[in-house]
Amino acid sequence: MEPARTLAEALAGETVVLDGGLSNQLTAQGCDLSDDLWSARLLADGPEQIEAAHTAYVRAGAQVLITAGYQATFEGFARRGVSGRAAAGLLARSVELARRVGAAAEHEVWVAASVGPYGAMLADGSEYRGRYGVPVRELERFHRPRIEALAAAGPDVLALETVPDTDEAEALLRAVEGGGVPVWLSYSVAGERTRAGQPLAEAFALAAGVDEVIAVGINCCAPADADRAVEIAASVTGKPVVVYPNSGEGWDARSRSWHGDATFDPARVRAWRAAGARLVGGCCRVGPADIARLGAAMTG
Image 1 (tube, rainbow, N blue to C red):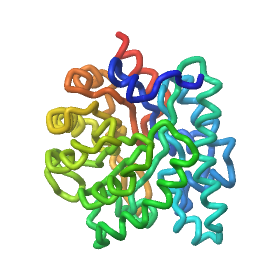
Image 2: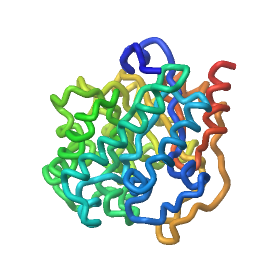
Image 3: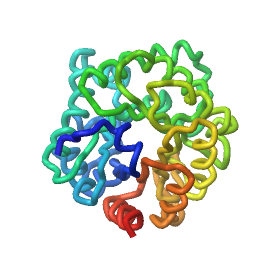
Image 4: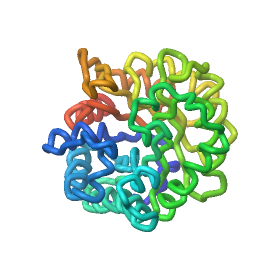
C-alpha cells in the first residue's frame, strides 16, 4: 500500500517498525553474497531475490523497507565495468524494487534508500573503524552523486546508515542539504562512542539543527549498546530516534563469518520507545521472525 502520510508525519504520533537484515534474508534464500558488491550485485543479477526478501519482511509486519543500496556505489560498479549511467539505473532499481513490494502490501510501507558509508565500498571492514584518512570534502564528493541518484528515484527517506565517525556524518549531512528528501542518520557504535571513538553526544549533535534529518540514532551494533544510545540521541537532538541493532553475534571481517550467540531481544523495544525511539527494527542477522516478534512486543 502506498503510504498516505509522510514518514515524518507518522513518527509524530506512533512508533514505526523497520525491517531486519537484508543480507541474512538473501542468504537464507540461497544467494551467494561473497562478492565485494555484496547484496548490491543482485540489483543486476537477481532483482527477484531482493523483491522476495523485501516481501518476507512486509509479511512479518515491517512498515519500512531499507533498500539494497548499502554497498551500491558508482565506484564499486565501475570496477566491474558498469558505466555511470548503468550504475545510476541500478541505484534507482533498488528503490523501485522496494516500492513495488510496498505497493502490494496490505499496510502502509515506506521506502528508505540505503546510503552506506565509504568503508562499505572498500569491502574490507573499514566501516567498522572509520577514520579513513580521507578529508571531509572528499567524502562529500564521494557520497553526493549516489545521494542525488537515489533521491531522483523517489524514496520516502534516505537512510544514512552505519556511519562510523563524525567526519563521515558531516560529509553526508553536507551532501543531503537542500536535496528535498528527508533523511535519518544512524551511527554504528560501541558503548557510548562511535566506532571511531567519538562521544555519541557530540556525534548526534551534528544532526540536531539539520532540517532534513527526521530521525537520528544507531544501527549495526550490539543490542546492549542500543539502550543508552537511544537515550543520548533523544536528549541531544530532540528528534525521533531510529534504532536497529544486529543480532548480537560478532562479525569477523577477515574470515567473513559470524561468531558468538544472538542476544537480540524484541522485548527491548519497550525501553527504546520509552526513551524516544520511533523507528525500530534490526540489522545484520535479524530476520523476519525477529521482526514479527518485535512488532508483537510493541502491541503487547
